[in-house]
Image (cartoon, rainbow, N blue to C red; front, side):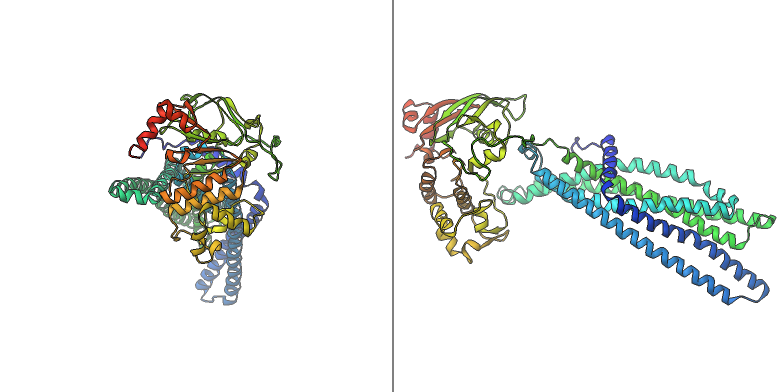
Length: 598
């Protein structure tokens, strides 16, 4: 896999601290679970003492050939009550911890959801969608499941160890020391395995995110992959990632899986040692050790080994949670859009009302996606109110970048952009977004009715107004042919063409009725006849509004008031269509190359 997938132990330590710190609001629930775990531990620790009595009662009865069945029944009843109470308390503790961790995971998902709306656009330009989705789904689920098991298991194991140690020393300190003698071996084993497994768990989560990113790309680009016969290459790319994940999971689980058989071996060794030492103490006499004590101690030895095994598993679960949490917190700690709560609206009221002339000026704009690589060194232009401005130029000239800067999706590194003399830096982003309506190349649709897709976040649009919008956008007839009309629900299985989706996004911009418009290749997905219909609708839509049209098909911008010709981030020509054609310069060459046969 790529070399950037490296494990940062400091990040994992920070994630563990953050995990436990984030659990503080749920302290009452954890404390209640602790109470039930304590009750369960008491029942489990006291039970062997009654097993000791039961064993001695049976042994004494066997020696005298007179077994006291009534006493055995009483002890058996007490044991049943103890173990039943132990089971109920254990269940309640697990139920509470599951509730706590799921509430924590829900809050984590909410934080991610809010974070997505606060990170700048450059984050999504630099990360695969599939990788981000993996954080929201796989990593958060791993945190929830692992923490659910780890916390309850850790608390129960520690309490059981303490309780059993006290009970063993009270019962027979010599055999207690025998059991404890194996403890250092277990601790060293757990520490070594945890140290080896943690980096692998963290790496696995990153590989899983990478693989999900590849899967998302393969799914979204399925048609292109088929069209260019690249299925084998893309399948091989996915299989390589899948194999890397398989190897990583195998390593991690193999390392972690070594704990259980090693612990089992040490446990059996401990049982044998208890029997040998107990037998020696009985043979010497005077030690207070009898057959019942040995049977009780064998149970204590098992109780002592079991939480040690569980501690190892809890540590592994915690390592897995930390590995997944590292990616979650890396996302939650991403740079956010600057806080603008103190900024007041300059041109529009909160309800979007206000009178805007639409005068836009670019003043010595300087920008680069990478601060070290400036793509727009010094851009200046003045757009009068109500003008239709076309921005043309070859790929990479900076056309879409200008739109991103107008909308404040990216911040300027120099210069300024003003609307009606007010810098967009001084406006809240919400106001900037209210000022501009947009139609982009990407025809983004969500699952819902056509009515909802057109109105989107717009309120107060009547059915008659919506009908007129559909007519102007050229989708009125199409909508009428659908079952349910405007209430037709668009889903993954809906047979809606790319051109129709483009028309719906245009209708969405019409419904928004913003004072300024940005049209980024708005007719790129429609045929020539539909383009003419859309062009007439656009001409009507842009009447009285300042509009910016990015176009590769120069036929759509012949009637523009101003054409800005961009190359390498600079304006090299400007004027209307007739003036630029008369200059016989760069624009004329572009136009003639498209319409040489006209």
